[in-house]
Length: 294
Image 1 (cartoon, rainbow, N blue to C red):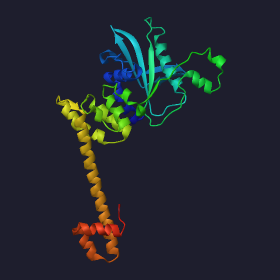
Image 2: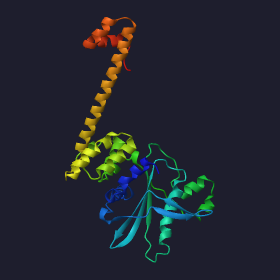
Image 3: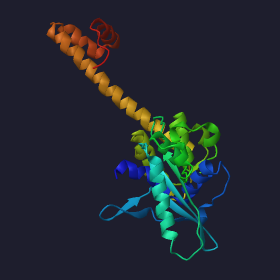
Image 4: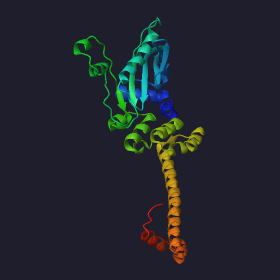
């Protein structure tokens, strides 16, 4: 598993974020799950191949525990490249979870699965086992005898505002930024898992400013200070401006060197001396030699 994939899943492993995702997506905004009732569940299950037993890993899995008993198991698949047979992967994960219960002697609990898609591409993959089988040639007569499996997929880069508003955890920052390019609507919301949020944002956007800002924010949190998103935004903007200024200085130096090289090559030594001191002359000669960038 690549580092990027791991970073995308760390934030999901926190109970409050996991519960929030289920509440916002699977339960339509209803506060069905509470963080204190969420406990990690095994993400590994087994199946028998042609010659040996194989293991398989789902991405994030958790139990809902009430009165000391497991009531539900949730499995969330994080995907950056959905497969045409994704519904079989879901059936396999859930089948493994039910297989564990087969000989437990305890009451059987439901296993609920969904897929969170982080890619920026649309997809037309089959959303049910029947749809997949139908696509591959199964007859309607035979499908009547086949139990169906439904695939719930949520595209995090394409979530309507009314769904994003349901998020109350740090995941709300992620979905807002992916869809709007800003945190404006959550500027007063407190950040809980600073490091995991920053790392996930960098993994999804490839923008290193998010993790560059994390260390200073974490130091403030370690001193007991709550960090609101507005403060984080200010720091990101400051770093962006500093980076832009540095790039501008480098670009300006390259333009100046290119102009000097042309002037000296043409024997215009006096102009070369003048542009170092006079900005207007520098601008005029940039235009004369069509030097707009390095």
